[in-house]
Image (cartoon, protein in one colour):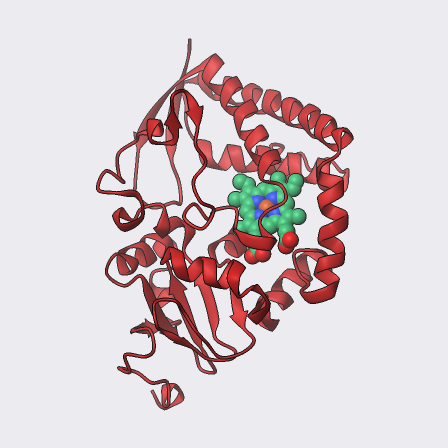
Amino acid sequence: MTIFKGKSIGDPKYAPVKGTVFNQLFYFKKLHDYHAQLAKTHPTMRLLAPNQSELYRIDVRNIEHILKTNFDKYSKGKYNQDIITDLFGEGIFAVDGDKWKQQRKIASYEFSTRVLRDFSCSVFRKNASKLVRVISEFSHEGLVFDMQDLQMRCALDSIFKVGFGTELNSFDESNALIYWRYVDPIWNLKTCDGRTADAPDVLPDGHKVEKGDGVYYLAYAMGRMSSIWGEDVDEFCPERWINNGIFQPESPFKFVAFHAGPRMCLGKDFAYRQMKIVAMCVLNFYNQEMIEYSLSSSFLTTTMANL
Ligand code: HEM
């Protein structure tokens, strides 16, 4: 415990300590649920690491403070940067400061062009039809299968084709190794979207942050908090997003899956377009039955029946 000395444990100026980052290893398979459970009672909490604290937050004001109002005080930090650079080089995902500004400007323009929109739509349609073919095979055999895994493959094929111009063909089992090589790190990155404090700061809820502390938002937990969405948070009720037949987008600081502020995801509209195309194809051709459900984000299992 000596390495955690001097961390202001018990000091109300700092977020309460709910363990060390090593605790997370015990809960690795259900990390999202573990965080969600802790966040219900502690909207901002700390897990201690040897050289710094890691702050986990679901408080909407704190998130807006870090991702927008005080954008310049927080960066990717060396730890996140090293992981991302290994995967994507010095691309927009990895860099900060002027390098990021320059790439963001160019990428924003590219993402808004009609050529990219048309090309990506044709890729999404093609991969959705591949997905339907695969589901057909399961359906004819009456097999149970993992829908989340299939959708991940479909999305990854599209990202590869649109982003790098290459066919990944991740439905093809002979490519399974290549598929997992990308899915694992991408999936893990998504679990820890965060920033590092470049200077000491005080969050709107009054908690102090030290230089070098990691600050992470918990998108999965936030989607399950009654403090953010109301008492009916666990009910499936898409109508909550619709007013007089018109979709009402929520504040990106509440629905933070695509990040928020100046570094908000540039591919959000592409992702939605792909989801709509895939949903239309799958729902049009198949009846789905969920046979196993767990609160964990890991896997959903479904059976399919031809309509
Ligand atoms: C459901 C699918 C997606 C989700 C949940 C998602 C989520 C995110 C998140 C959380 C970030 C912020 C990362 C960070 O800085 O910590 C991000 C950034 C980004 N996303 Fe997405 N994304 C999705 C799909 C896409 C797609 C399909 C594209 C491209 C076609 C894309 C392009 C980008 C780019 C370029 C950035 C970097 C923005 C910047 O740093 O300025 N995303 N996305």
